[in-house]
Structure formats: C-alpha cells, structure tokens
Amino acid sequence: MSGKLYKTLLAALVGVLFVGVSFTQRELVREREALGLIGYTTELKGAPPVLILTTVALGGFRGLISNALWIRANDLQDQDKFFEMAQLADWITKLEPHFTQVWLVEA
Image 1: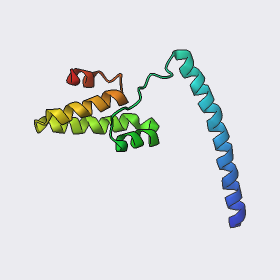
Image 2: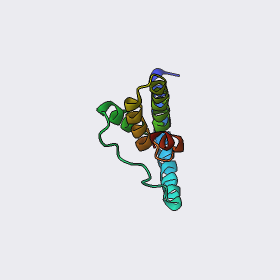
Image 3: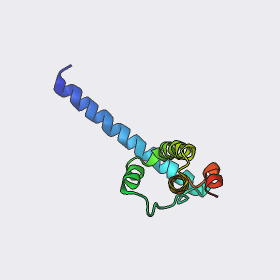
C-alpha cells in the first residue's frame, strides 16, 4: 500500500472515530442530565495557575490530580506542616467535592 493511500485511510478512520465519539458524548450528556449530575463540580478560585491549568487541560483526570494532591497532603502531615496540608485539602475538596476523607481531615 502506498504511503499516500495509507495516510488517506488513516485520516478517514480518524474522521469516522470522531463522529462516533460525538454521538457517544451526546448520549452521555443526556444521561448525566437525566441523573442530575450536570454542574456538580465547583470552580477553582484562589488556586495557583498551575493547578487551574492542569485541571482544565486534563479535565477527566481530576481524580488522578486530587490523588496526587492527597498523597502530598499526607506527606506534609507526616512532616508536621499542617498549614500547607490544609491548603491542599481545600484544593482537593474543590476538585473532588464528594471525597469524604478530605472533608474529615479539613474539619
């Protein structure tokens, strides 16, 4: 198969996959609206720009980001740096408002 034909077929496959993802995304949004899950996240205010950029750029990976922050907060607690730990806990509650363990620590 020639290189030009191969690239054309790959581009067509990408186009078909994007259309399929578009339909799937619409269905997922409808289901989230039916379950009342739209808009349950809060806007990050007062967070450092790096955290805001990371959450916007990696949207679906918010859980991984909050997990990394949670690990850092536990390390800070072991080092008796409670003020910094409280700030991280605040950011985690904004990223994942339904994560009960962070609310317990922040309380």
